[in-house]
Image (tube, rainbow, N blue to C red; front, side, top):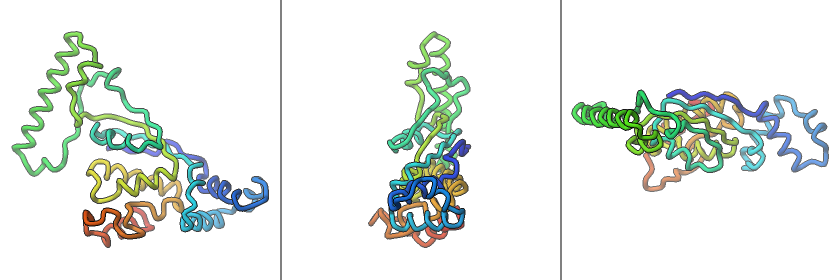
Length: 230
């Protein structure tokens, strides 16, 4: 899995602070901006997060490039609707080499792993036969499994990212999207340390939202997603 932060709003915390302060001030934007030092911007962002005034966070966006993940992952990812996506097309891009993702749970089951690989390779062989026979890639792709590797570019605003981390950094999230969320959070904290200082699963600043389905590892989870990063 390769995850890159391709682009993000320049000085995201400063932009958010300007937008939020405008709500409470009769001053103009230039006056507000002139009074925002690095230190008081950081202090204000932390206060803003504590107050839960999150609408201003929508003014900052973050674009991630993601490669080496499965279609099973991206089917989950695109359910986060307040985001923009551009994904490698199986209609226009023929999967000549047919790369795929193997679930780690199979590593301890050699016979099942062998069966998995055999079936995947057979799918790949038949897929290539279809293409050589003139079947359009848009039809041959009906053979391809969720394990098929893909690439995607994702843009979310800071508020939606917090929501994404709250759900997908949870230990009960599916393993692949959980790993993706952790990497995205690490990158986001580098760009907006005060914005994402307390980002992570829902249990890091309150009771576990999973209730009876809790993983039971709250102390370990809170330590992992502490202010120092992950």
